[in-house]
Image (cartoon, rainbow, N blue to C red; front, side, top):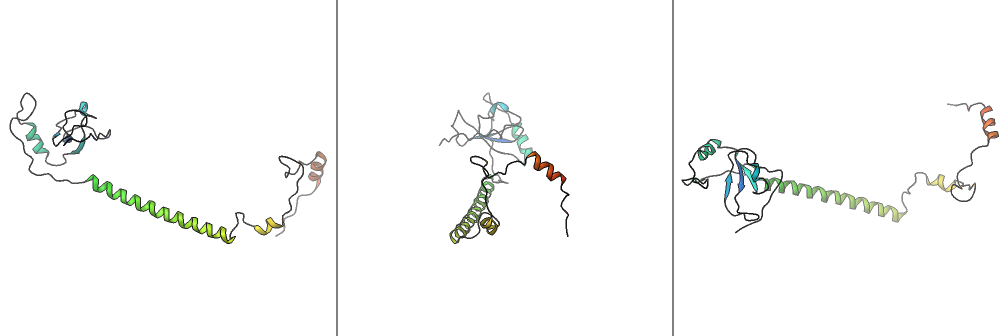
Amino acid sequence: GKFDDELDSRLLHSGRGVLSMANSGSNTNGSQFFITFKDVPHLNNKHTVFGSVVGGLETLQKVEQEPTDSADRPVSDIRILETVVFINPYETDLKAYLEEQEEKEEAEKKDKALKRKREEEDAEGGKDWFSNPAAAATAKTTAYKEGVGKYLAPAPSKKEEKEAKKLPPPVASG
């Protein structure tokens, strides 16, 4: 059967030994593939790159020296008898994904526990949002005027400023 292209701009046809899906147009990938012998940038984003040759480059040289027909296909059959997958990206990606999910679940559990604790404290009338509730209960609030800034003390008058300058500085005891 045919399946869709899986193009990735980070995976390019650069250098020898790049493995790509052979196709006859967009989303017509089947079971055929090709291996590059050199940079072929005109194939980027047209063919799905899915791997690279990391060993046996001497075999790749022998394949490259095989005579080809007018369609650039080898005259004699070339058979690959064995392949080895050194790193399976699906396993690596799956492991990373599972670790990420586990971290998210742990973070959610911590968040839920913290939220539950806060709700319990609020229900009990536990800790208030300010640090000294006794001082807040006894503090006297004075409104100096009406409207915006009514709790701000007015600036001292010129006379009060002069008197404050005449006073000696407070003496520290200790």
